[in-house]
Length: 114
Image (cartoon, rainbow, N blue to C red; front, side, top):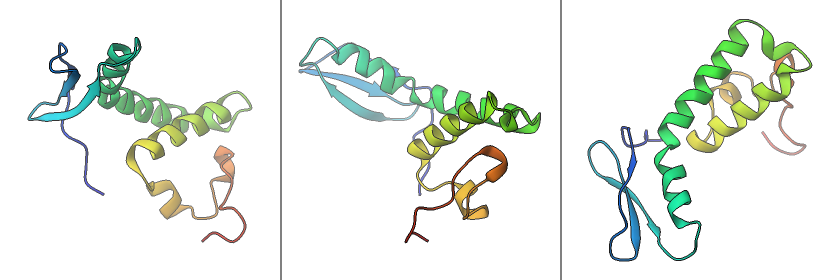
């Protein structure tokens, strides 16, 4: 899977019924201006590279210091890993731990899945 366009991404002022989202080298998305939430959606999309980096940093920190193995830390690490997987597609964690990471509370694959 290819990497995303380099950040930072910026939500630009609306034009022609769209909020353009510009990356470091090119336009990466257009958000239709219909609806009161369109500007907020554009800002959220523009923040995606920063949010992904923050999720990775937080997951690394929690895992490095074994905080992901605590009752309080395990659900946080699981949410972070899920968010990272949603952003990047299949993760290295699944490749290296196809049966799940029991130490992080990650379940293995569902019945009938590889």
